[in-house]
Length: 443
Image (tube, rainbow, N blue to C red; front, top):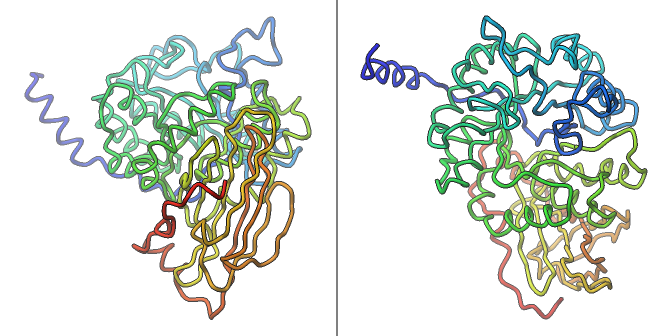
């Protein structure tokens, strides 16, 4: 077949590539993911308890249920890289490593489903995965059907060993094949981050149309410096990033590393709070067998999870930054008239060894509803009662720590249909229009 004919056929196929339209991920996905904690450990002979194997995923599925994570919404058990044999079968099929996954992925999937959980898998839109295992290029339809046959619920597609310019075509095409299997599968893309690294401007209109979530920035590492770099990236680029998030399509700042080795207790609280403000997927990557109780409590904080899972699906923004102090805010339900509720996080980036006082009125934060707001500290379980806009709140924020408040709007009149209108039609009212540049004197 000559080149012109190939191009004509390809163009015809792409004409019929449909949007994902899977109706999934109406709130950010929650679950457990192997990569950051267990990486590509394939040495089951010398390290059988920590290698990437069916035993590891069965164990984590058991703990997600028995330790109460599943009851709070953590429902996915996701394999990452290094689950494959180094070669496909003679018929072109992906083959799970026969030593580490002797029962096969369909059996593992059924086990995870028997626990009331969902099963996620990793592959790569390239010749190889990032760790050098077979990628999906040349096998898009075959691999999409394999995932459906294994009853996969979540598919993460990385972007190593491929050209970023091919991704505008390739990721939608694979999404098309996923959709065509008839099995609902959340589609997680690495499409934007590889294009950003190569100097391209991602087409977020297309990315939103074809992916349920996507990576924008670096892989998270087990360090506070890594978490800070992600927070900075999302704050510094929020005008581009924030409008792309919403029910069914989310920005993904990467995994929760709470309970591992690199974050202090205060820093762990900060990651959980800021990820909730960002409407981020909450995918734990931690050894649930050994996690300490205080870190488990952070991951299981119901009130912060509720902020993350707010049905409006509006990603939060950094609204203030000065002298090491940042304020982040996210519009949430309930909504009355044009007044939103808000989650507000006060973040202390200073390292001077003493907590910092932040004093601010609700009105200075832009919360001006005359009926006031019921304000609660989500970590300390302190309820401040109903506060009016001129009330000044003073919080003490530890170094590299956070205070996160929830301010629920209180009606001084009958509720309107604003919430329903916003949910169904994405009302043009800008929930961030209340925030104006403020003087720095209140810090």
